[in-house]
Image: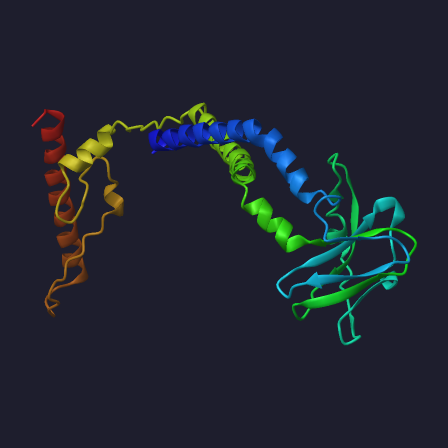
Length: 266
């Protein structure tokens, strides 16, 4: 079991090293490609200065995000999107997590903050109005994400990063566990056998069917001889006492003979 675990640890370690090396080798180029595809200045659908309005073609399958410079943020109510029937399309205000997803400029600096997100109901021409004083940009996030996924260099870099480091951590933890078990002192089991005493040997050698132990190791006074005698009218108490004494003498002589045979080695 331990040998198989060591083999898997070695395999995971080798695989994680290969993936990490791939990530290191592709990191620079993949980062440049990501910045190029996400650069707001080059990948926007429309740039609209403060106080301006302009028509823009939007599709139903698109996912449109309005961004502005971090230092010159616009208010949500200063941006309006009107359809051909004059109805305003209500935008979705990004939550705090989505606002942390800033967009880069041509230098790779994250300076553009999401302001509103629009999901249009139909493929049509819409009017975008900027009632604020600062410039806004509208992006098709779905198109940008598709371009990132279709780039093989970016995918290889992302996969190697996502799997290389976790596999390395798993291999490291597994190696530490195996090393700890290897260096753990093994507990030896000591089996002690007791040497039988003379009493135990004598008892085993002279054991009877009723598991009785003969003299001299058993006190005769504690052995009760139970015998059922027919009680006739002619038997007196004196005769019963004589009968018990005869039985006791016979038992003593029998046990005494056993002990002598045992002591002589018979």
